[in-house]
Image (cartoon, rainbow, N blue to C red; front, top):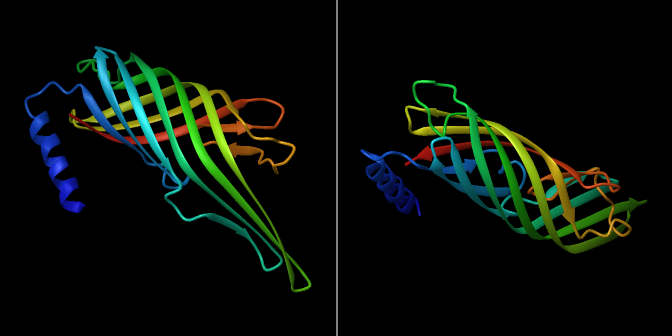
Length: 209
């Protein structure tokens, strides 16, 4: 597998030499912490405009476990998500190098996630353990509006940081699920049972080719 990655990176390097770089392959750096792997491809369609397609795999990390000797809680999720967005750069950081991969941008985004969510509670009543578990098939749809900044180094390495707000809808039955105040649907964090308000924060590193 390591040889495959090396060959792929060499191909990108050779292909990009002498070419006007209109593409970037990107990795979400915060994804490992949040139990998913996210990789995207961004393509320049105009001097200050790009489109991006992102795929994510949910459940690569170990299940999240919390608790103590008296009670414990185990959470795990497995599935996938897909995102697509349009970005418009409205202010370049480097005026002499105007590019769609350098500057402040605005980006509307739509995303869909489908995953299995499992929860398990264990309570110790005087060394008598009682367990309760649940499993749900979750589908989620989000519409987000992002403000971000992209900065490229030597027209090769790309950093992308953004913050978004919007709405996230899912098929959770709140009456039967202990609802987290910040329920993570992997495409956005939804707040409170009574509305669909959601936020997201991202940090990506990319390679231009």
